[in-house]
Amino acid sequence: MVEIRSKRCKNSGIISASTCSTRVTKKARMDICETEPDQKRKVVKVTDSAKAYRERVRKQLEEAFSGVASEADEGIRHDVEACDPVQVAASVESAMFEKIGWSNRVSKAKYQSVLFNLKNSQNLDLRRKVLLGQIVPEVLVSMTAEEMASQKRERENVQIRLKTMKRCMHGTDEKEKASTDMFKCGRCGERKCSYYQMQTRSADEPMTTYVTCVNCNNHWKL
View 1 (cartoon, rainbow, N blue to C red):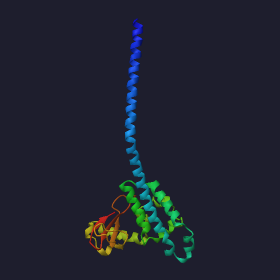
View 2 (view 1 turned 90 degrees about the vertical axis):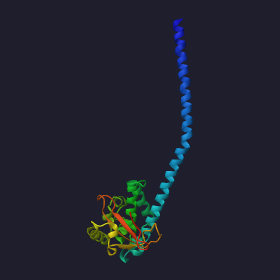
View 3 (view 1 turned 30 degrees about the vertical axis):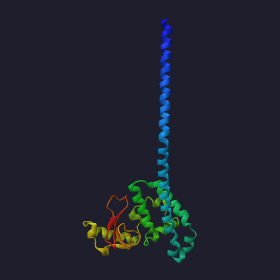
View 4 (view 1 turned 180 degrees about the vertical axis):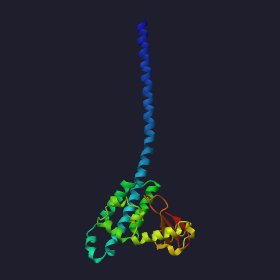
C-alpha cells in the first residue's frame, strides 16, 4: 500500500509539473507573439534607413564619376568614356559599406571624407584613377584623407596646418582658406563657403574639415 501511494504521489507531482510547464510555455509564447511585431518594425526601420542612406551615397558618387569625361584630357577621353560611372559608383559604395559600415559617427565621417575628396573640383586625378580602375574601391576606402587629397590641396593643407596649429578656427586668415559650394550653411542656407583641413586626430582617421559661411560667418567642422 505504501508503494502504491508513493507512485501516486510521484505521478501527481509529474502531472502538476507538466501542467505548470505547459502554462509557462503558453505564457512565453504569448510574450514572444506580443514582442515580435515591435522587433520586426525596428529591423525594417533600420534596413530602410540603411538602404536610403546607401542610395544617396551612390547618387553622389555617380555625379562625381559622370563628370570625369568632360574634365579629362583628349588623349584619355576615349578610355574614360568606355567606363560606366554607375557601375563604378556601385562598386565603391559597396566597398565603403563592407569596410566601414554606416551607422556610427566614425563611419559617417569616413563616408564624408571619401565623398568630399571624390567630389572636390580640384581632385580630378583621384576621380579619374578610380573610374579607370587604377585605384580599386577596396584600396580607396582604406586611404587616409591626406592620401586622397589632390597634390595642390595637400600642399595647402601642410601650409595651413603649420600656420594654424596654435590658433583656433575663428582666428584663421581668410586668405588661407579655399572657396567652395560643396557645403550648405545650416544657419542661412547659402552654399558660399570657405574651408580648410587639419589632421587633428590619428593619421589613420579622416582629416577635420573646418568650414565658414561667407554669407553669415557661421562656423562648423566635419
